[in-house]
Image 1 (cartoon, rainbow, N blue to C red):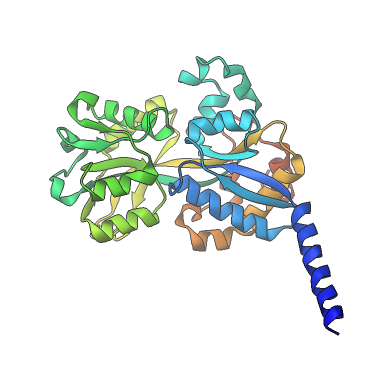
Image 2: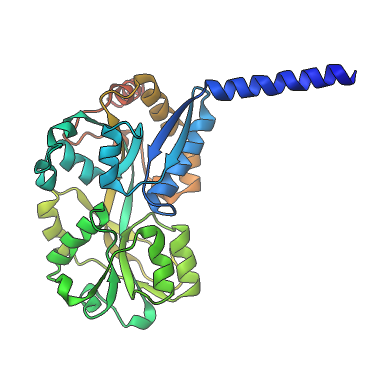
Length: 319
């Protein structure tokens, strides 16, 4: 009897192992550990892996959104997160993306879908005395890692606000690191993209009084002259963070999943299908996905959509 039970258990274990080995491994490029893209990518990977049996999705830390373009094109990852701005600019070879040696390769990028809009957050220590964007002058203030998407966006923000890099002490740490640095008073604050209620931001506000700053409408209008209108107004609701008693007016950056033209069509189809069919659970787990619909996700922005994603959206009656 013991021998029969052992054989049965062994057979079951072998079946599970065989099933796991049969799953194709798919990597999703995100950003630094603890950042908003990393959190979003991890949730998508876990949810979609559990929703089907053919593919096992896992996240990979990266140097950020700009690095993700090269990682996808060099097949280091099969999928990656990015901002709509970065992807649209690269695909259409706008600005600096039209000046690099690999510019023609960007036409091999393929849009999968938009999965959310994430606010740009300007936050400062309450004891810094900073009450507006102009007040960062003379303080140590973090604007992210050079060459990252957020750093480039911050340079545009500062220029639109008529603030020079010489006006403050520039900090260059990632979103994943900045909260500890602000808590330890290394920086008076930072300017970063992350979803509403990000855990690290919540922890900071629970231990250190912070203030979130408005982005003036005229500053956003100036930025959109260079971003082709792709930045959208965004309101951070009151009480999103401890001590934040009033709504904050800022802007949002659409977030996308992308791949390249050679990505497996069935894999992209399954990823797309299982994302949208499990949107309710994703929304419940993370505010980044709230308010999204397949119609919004499939909206085109002058880029070519991957056939696998297009197949799902056509079946869903969206395209």
